[in-house]
Image 1 (cartoon, rainbow, N blue to C red):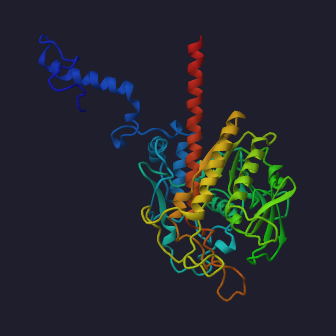
Image 2: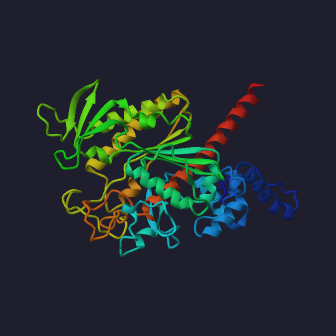
Image 3: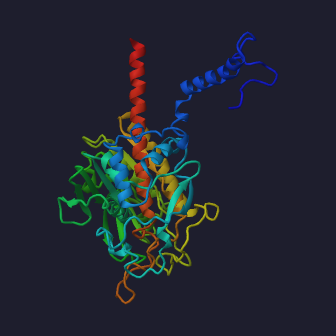
Length: 457
């Protein structure tokens, strides 16, 4: 190791001339190594094969690291226990949401034939998509690694807990992706309290883990007032200060909520507050003022977060999954636009802009506002910031491969949802890493608390 003393200055570790020559050579090195081992113990855990790697138990509470490694080898692909531990500390010091997509020849980790949970309109390979390279990428953050989703590790972390996806069909897309990834270890049983497919509950009996989805495309109370509307996609009335009780009444017992919204706010909308019409977005109704495009999104997010912060019995962690941009080219979604690319963008090849940037910024601003209020109430908020990563994946959408060409259906090219398998599977990589970070936060908090107690004695 390079000396920290200026040139020409003698180290305080210099041995007196009376010391034997052999000791004169060995002693400084021995003392320096001793100091390093005391002050920098983590060097030995992250130095590859030259030292013993950190145990997975040092980073997250698994019941059996050996079991985790065996399952990972059994299902194929992913990151071993040792390498996961080595990358855990580095990922906690870098922004995992900034990076590039790099090739991953091991993917995918399931197929459309091995997983029954894939929604038909996202079953791209079934409906004839000719290329498959869009499934063979992984996210590589700048400055660290993001381990591939380990289903056994995830199920151990959420043992005895519950998670709910709250949002629109992209939220359902994410839940189905997770079910497919977890199917390598276990399939859940249906424990839904209703036959309505928009409100599903699944239980992993071995782990006593419940997964749920709540359909709420606007997050607040809404109703369709015209099935055709000015753009032939319906006209909706949004009651921006009223809760959508179909999900807000059910979140009290959940440990994790993943909230998302955005795409439905591009449709024609009439906004209500205090039981009166206050404006609209492209409703083309007489005597109704057109307000800024995302007026409704901001107000809806604020109402949804207010509901979470005041929900009786809720003590969980709320994740806001940020806006996943669509990739229509050569026309809007209802005017012939399509997405036919077969490769990801590099980060320097595209920029978040326009309405996608505005939707993202509103989400982040309202998240920060809710986080501050939640902190005062003892609640935790986390930003599942998927916008940049998904901006770079124009190749991951179903496009026209969500139905057979000869089917007489009125479906537009789908450049909003994600093929399964596909880029959306990476969202579980991010979520698992964030759950592991929670474990490290909890241990750090306990150590700080213990240290304060010792000092107070």
